[in-house]
Length: 161
Image (cartoon, rainbow, N blue to C red; front, side, top):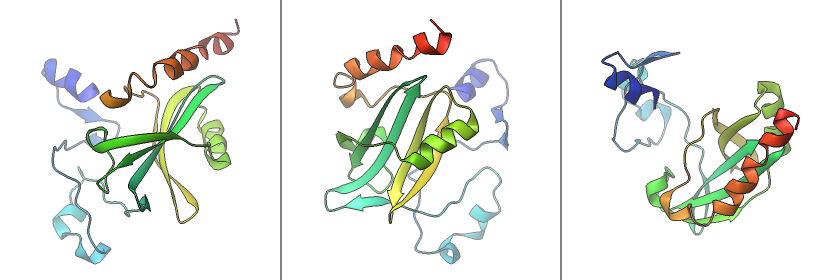
């Protein structure tokens, strides 16, 4: 979003970590750190991280916890590709919020936000702590309308109303 605004204004897309390379390519998954090309390790516009999937017999899962004040929803999104994105999600189910993430939210001081995470080999792995959550996947919007309305009620306690 910020990058798009910068482009429209004719400014460079520079964020808090410097120049970011945006790509529409599929995220490559390598068998080991040694298999990652040197050009990727040496490119400051790329992030290389360990692949820690949450997977079962149905496919790959990404968990999303969205919260506002004292309201929240948490779900698991099932995709048919190791990198779960809105375009490959075909199922959703509710999921509990792990206590480790509640502690991280408090530590970071988030009143409103979205945490993307998985549970890999029994361990919670937080991928993204975002203060500006976007919309749910188009296929899930109707299903989440009531949940979004409930989430919006979190503004009342937050404002002290």
